Structure formats: C-alpha cells, structure tokens
Image (cartoon, rainbow over all chains, first blue to last red; front, side):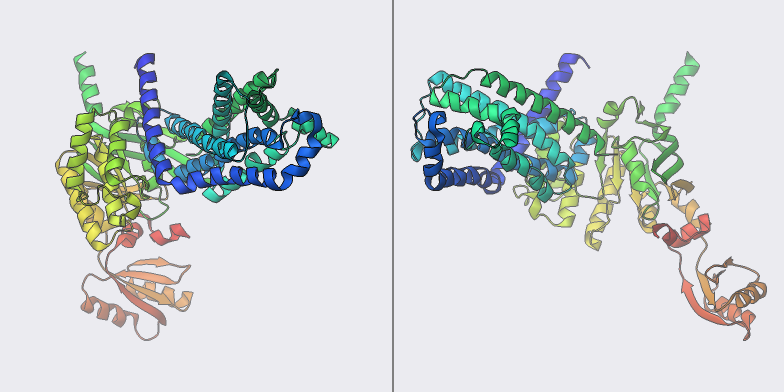
Length: 266
Length: 322
C-alpha cells in the first residue's frame, strides 16, 4: 500500500468515526449539551449578578473602565471550552469499556481513526456551546469591541484550546475505569484550573503563591488572549503563548491517548 | 521450483496453523504451548471449560493481543508481521456484544460497510440482505439498545459478515442465549459452514461442538489435550459411571480391592466405576462391595463435558475455576 493510499484510508476512516460520533452526540443531545452549556451560563449569571458588583469595583485598572461583564465573558468562554472535556472523556470511556472497540481493532481500520473522530466532534460541539454561551453573554449586557478579524481570532483560539483539551480528555477517558470516574477526572480541567487563572479576576490580585501559578499555567494566556481580542485591547504575546500551550497540551494528550489505546488490550 | 510450489500450496491449504503458542499474565500461564491447524472451509470446535484459554486463543488469532511465544499463520498471513492483512480477511464475534448501542441496526451495518471500505451501492445492498437474513428488518430503524439478547447477537454476527470474511471466529456464540436463540444460532453456523466459510467456534458444551464442528480440539489449562472428529472424541469418553464416596481411606482401599477397576481420588475419597450395564452392573458393584465397606455417598453419572476432561486429563474440569 502506498503512503498516499494509507493516508486516504486514514482520512476516510476518521471521517467515518466522526460521523458515528456526531450521531452519538445528536442522540445524547441533552446529556452532552445541557451540562456543557448550563454550567458556564450559571457561572456567568452568578458572577455577573451576585458577585460582579463587588468584584467589578475592585478591578480598578484591569477593567480599563469597562463594566465587569466585559471582563467576565471571555473567562466564561474559556470555561465553556473546559466544560466540554467532560463529555469527551465520558464518550471515549464509554467506547473503551464496551465491546465495540475490540471489533474495530480486529478490522483493518486505521489506528487513531476512532480517537480522531472523538476529538473532531469534541471541537465541533465546543464551537456550538461557545456560540450559545457568547449569545447569552450578549443578552445580559456583554458589549465586545472586537473587529471581524478579532472575532476570527477568537474562533481560532477557542478551536485550538478545544482541540488541545479534547486530546487530553480523550486520554483521561481512555484510562478511566467508568464513565463516572471519567467525569470526575476532568473536574480539575473544568473547575480547578479555570479558577486558578485570570478567569474571574486578574492574576495580579491573587496571593503570591497562587499568583505565580496562575501566571504560569496555560489557562491564563488563553483567557488573556480572548479578553484582549474581545475588548479590543492589545493582544501582545498572549496569542503566541496560548497557541504554544495548546500545541503542547494537544501533543501530550495525543501521545498519552495513543499509548493508553495501545496498552488497553494487553 | 516445482517442489517449492507444492510446499506453498500445502501451506495455504490451512486456514489457521498455530504452533507453540504461549501466553502468560504475570505468573499465571494461560496458554502453555498450543498447536492447532484448521483446514480451509472447516468448522473447528475449540472445547473447554471457563479459564481453559479459549478466549485468549481467539484474541491472539484475531490480532487483539500479542502472544508471548509461538508462530501463527492465518489465511496465509503471518500473524505477527502481517496483522493488517489478517484483519482484512477475518471476522470476529465475541462473547460480549460488540454492537454500537446508540446506532440503529441498519446504521451499525452501514458503519461496518464504511470501515470495510465497500462502495456505497454494495454497502446498501449488503445491509438490506443481512437485515433480511438475520430477521432484523422490522428492528432495522431502532437503536440496538432496545434489542433483546438474541437480536443483539444476530446483529453482531451480521456486522461480522458485512466484510465477507473468509474466516470467522465465534467465541461462545450461544452463551447467554435462551434455547430458541441457541437453536437459531446453530442453524446460522451450519449455514455459514455450508457456504464454505472457515469457522473457529469456541464452546463449553460438548453437545454444541458435536452438533456443529467437523473437528474438535479439547483445551485444558492452556494445552490441547485431545483432538479429532466428534465421533473419534466421543469414543474416547467413557460412558456412564458410578461415583462412590467413602467415609475414610480404609474403606476406599477395601472398595478399590473389591472392585478392581475405576479411577480413585485419594484426596476426596472418591472412586469412579464404569457403569455400562445400567441397573445390572450397579447391583453387581454393590454386591461386590459387600456390607463391610462404608459408602457415604453414591451417585450415577451420564457422560458430559466433565467426563471428557476426566477421561482426557484425569482431572474434573471444575477444578480449573477454583
């Protein structure tokens, strides 16, 4: 088989698996979408209406004179991407603990096609949930100052971050013993890391140790970049930093997921 | 040149040839040097109790797990170096349902057609044909999560057949099915065999192997302990026997001296005596034992898988699961 042929078949198989996963997503619509939309929306309303007054007053220079909602929505957008990792991990785990994966393995299906399908659908799903959550943000008073190019950048960063987290959560789903534990294992991605980043307040307002962590972990440049793009502030090096982190997470997640997939039959 | 051709021809006449297959998980040896050969078009029964290593053999031969040692050739391809080529000619239906529960029966078959890279027209035709053949037309548009056990198993095999495999592995295909489902499955396997597909069937039931297989190999603790046609194998199994259990070793000794036949198990204080003659030989055995030998328990057995193992290995198969 020529290299070209192998590549065509790999692309074909990945597309088949993507189609399969898309059907799953539509059939589990409530399960997959409600959680990954509801959680960010609740966070948005909670922080905007209940905590936003106090936080907004304390923001000072970081808000650059804009209302807190404009600071908050980019953070919520990042959380929406992170919330999608639960569904990905659960779906991969459900596949791996069922008999169907063994069937795929005994067929001449391209290695990696199954995971590529999961990751592809995960990114598509996140683009949908992120659009819905941004829409809710606009309804409750978010006023972005982004140009068309900035919006394109936002879509790019959301897709890249979602792609990176999808590989990571695919690996998590691969090693989890059950769907419930797959969900549990993504909680740090969904909540811990977003809270320890510049999601709700700027990192420089945090206590020293936490501040150092927040400034050096991947979620912060992603939020900062989204916020700069959406509020029309200078992006600086946050875009490069965010994309570099996304690349690193995607690669690590990919290698981990691949290794776990190969190991899972022994 | 001529001689080489003959050699190659002989080699490809076997659908499966396995030699010295070994597999261990840590200390636990699952396969301890298995040799097998299955001719093309043959329905081959691999008979053994739980834990004998049947599923491990299927998982190795279907490229799911690597063997620790040994060589295997499947449909003319070396298992280790040409796994991809092996996968394109085999089909596997395992003990556990391998259908996508969120897809409908029809979608499951389509999925297989796509992954087998069948052209769209053939995919549609074959799906319709298989739904018809496996009596799934009415349920074709329902998600398979709603299917009964028997329906799922039928869909599972239909999915396996989508790619027209020349060799099919059926790992305990009737386990968990009700008598009617089992009967349907038997007929399906017979039909496949009649179409010339090579089948490796694993089972715990002597009757099933007897009904379906052209040849049987008996697997015990990771070794093949006997092989042959069902008739050859049944000839090696003793008929009915009487099982006597004694209160102490002295009684067992006395009984063994009095009866002069049968096999004894000193640990369990059990003596098994052939009972070909029914009531008459039972009466004879009791007469020979006399009144002095204390028999604690007596039971009469007709042949089953346990007897196959007892006859072939000297161990009851049940010990393996403990």
